[in-house]
Length: 396
Image 1 (cartoon, rainbow, N blue to C red):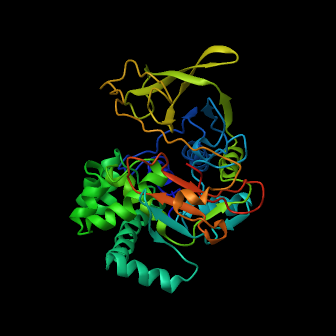
Image 2: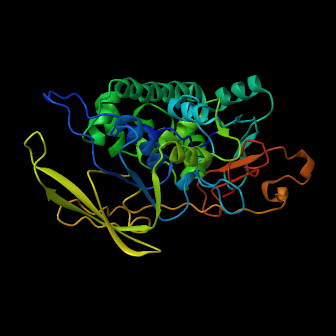
Image 3: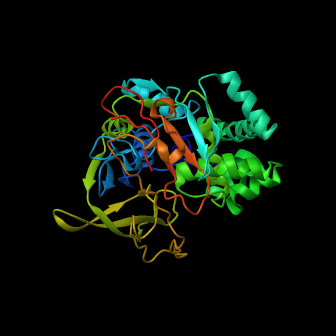
């Protein structure tokens, strides 16, 4: 079952916080007096955890969060996960976190799915694996096998990041990191759609329309016009062995925050300003970062030697300004797409999908192609995170 894996954010983020890169400095830098992290999702809490390991127990670490700890992993107040509900088996950080925090895990159970084009199902999965494979090959030739190999190649490139992290190697930009992982072709995914990337790789338009587009609509509420890199990450969810944390994946975030011994500051960060300070031991000019935030105590400012931002810099999510930075930090002006999940306690009207007898309808998830009359991206059965069963894809 395709699903959105939790694989990218911790890897990209932690590449920047676990080390300072290959450095020829004659003396090690002094430990920071204070560290700040903006955002208490999986990226922010994991960063606080690794920063604590890097600098020891004596350095104060503050984590700012204006909502609930967990970010996109936080379940809704009805105890259903609508964000990152599964974790990829190759996400070594998450596996380590679950083991370190003593969190029980659940394997993703098989659930049959179908692709609906607005008039009929173009593909329906059965409970027979071999039969499913034969039908996929009949409909799409070698495209499914080639996609599996293509996704595995991307995953193998992702896995190189652990080697860099084990040597405390860091990167100054996302482009430099991605180039180190997969070369120029990996970076090019940032500047093309997933449809363009797969066409260039030789996949048929029929396969893109009937398989790739429905996966994108399920994960992100968008089609094959989505960014190529985002789409490639989304396809990692077609792999087997997906798992989740019993009780909700947000328990990892809460556990990391506790293990980091960081102070959680509940408030909204308004601005980050660069402030010069006295020269350090090395004789080079040093800078502090002044964070202005609003909490129950009112408007407050704090100074930090290191500040890590682990929240999308988009006005609807984190309307943070950055005065007095040189060079100036450009405003993030791209549209931030939001996907809405609707939870309904009830049964599917199977006649809408051409099934007059509900007992003959065995699909747990329905993916859709682009069709003007369709008003949904996907439908799936979900389970409360506290029931002890792995969460299924969200309704949407």
